[in-house]
Length: 532
Image 1 (tube, rainbow, N blue to C red):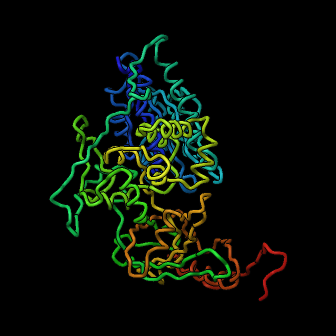
Image 2: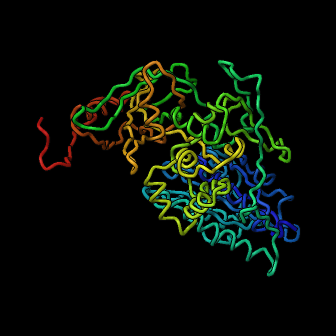
Image 3: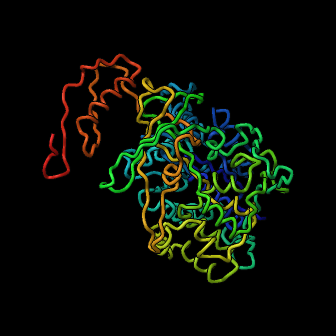
């Protein structure tokens, strides 16, 4: 029996794809540990009936005990909120606990999960007040709803070493708990190894299909894809729009050093209107040099046009799209691949299996291990080393096909900038302020941030791929309430204050009287206050 431990449902709540990536890592190890893992996007759970039909589906419970094994990997987002895809599940738990919520109706039921064994791992950041509050709530709520906790809550801290926290929980808690609880002593596992002695990689759920007849066309239209056929962590690729950047103005003087840009985008054609303090999401693009370097190293034809289709052994109804296709290899590498950010240690481990030179393979394997954590932080993170640097310069023996690269390379994530313009004054224009990240690597070469480098390279009249994301910040509906506004200004203290008060008034949907602000106070970081 390949899976003597039976089925386990692994649910994720993810905003940027990290929780989803962690769940996929666990699924890749299912044969090694003897459990058949079913990964479930919490967005599939929209009501109580979905819990019964999807999570508690009898096909996936233990045939003898009739119990369901379940683990959740969930992130906390914003001010202690669930991620977008986990919101309905979060509200279902509230309803079953008898907690009122405006978003969902239903009846309390404290025995709703009485046939479930579970454990939870949370992703958060200690810099925020509501650290891992969603994972803590779910862990507590499931127990109150009669589920049986089989392991203590796992906590991941992105302010320190989130991936290390997850790896420790996965090895020392997740797999150990499952094996000790559900595998009989002495159970042997069928483990397949590849020629290098590593665990064999699972088959890819997709393959690349080339379209020679589309090569050379000036415009290639991607296929229309239904919402449920798109990976949750890739939705923004399909929902974003090209908007013209109308104005770019440098805010710093040459004496300041560095660069901070004021940028304005024409959003008149966007269906979704924005409100002040919402976020403008920018989908960055890699520069041509990086794209051509990695294509040359892996022998990819940049002009080739391809689509992703279900692999021969994969179920077509479970296949989900990662990004719009068909597209050229150049567009894929430019728009969807994170070539510049340091890869995770788990991604280094996968890269190692494609290195034909033992020296390359051993170096990548070493830095992907727990023992190589310090070396990884020093050489990869502090050194600003991305996949393009590894493949084209440091470990040139790496060789892989396009479909293998698509499966391995992390996706480019949108960067979110707080909108600084007033939606009342500028309804068709969004303004943001961007501090350009740049520096010098240890080898004396330049580096720039993935997104800020892209923004610094575009000129007025150029398109930029964007979408608007709601903010949790809204002005009070009661105009009698007192607000304290705290902001940072380097030199234009009084002018910034006036602008902020003006923006608050214009952004409000209420009739906030202009004379309600009574006073302001300044705090200075220098010994002497600037002259008036």
